[in-house]
Length: 210
Image (cartoon, rainbow, N blue to C red; front, side, top):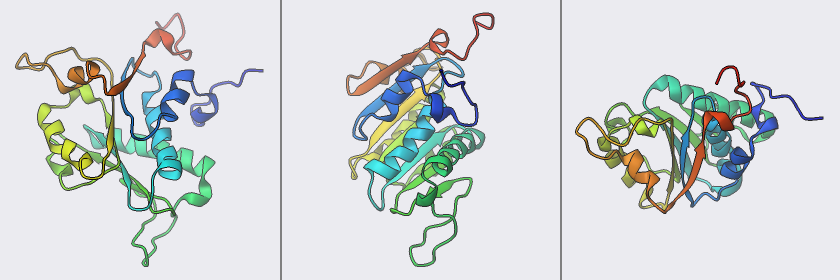
């Protein structure tokens, strides 16, 4: 019997594209263009945990970058829920003075192998994120972020050989100055593995709703 979708345990009934995306090697850049409520936030939150546990080493971080704090909190909360369910013994649950690792907060989840998931709001320009070095940069709602944001965050991947996953719902090809957005340019860049998911592809939308 097919398992019914559970909003609080979505990892039990992942869509095929989510499984493919989550299992994509860390060095691969990914581009996700999706309709609302299609599962991109779920996919990215689960992947962030899987990378920390299975593909990253001590001192390496995943950074979830969103426009607002609310979006970042939501994705990190999903990641923590997944980690608690699947890898409960891998999470640092109290502050460790010897290692400097801390218990989960609204911005950071630390794992016992020395990896972390960070979540911060980027704002309009990404200036507040400067100075970080990350192995995987996960950008939520990238179509709505300015070119200044990408100029600010791209160097954090350079030295460590990091990669980028950028996801969003659509917002056209051009910015207010009629220049191609960075998100649209990524859609034409062959280095990105592409995931295109329409609302019709999501089995959780009813035909009546669509």
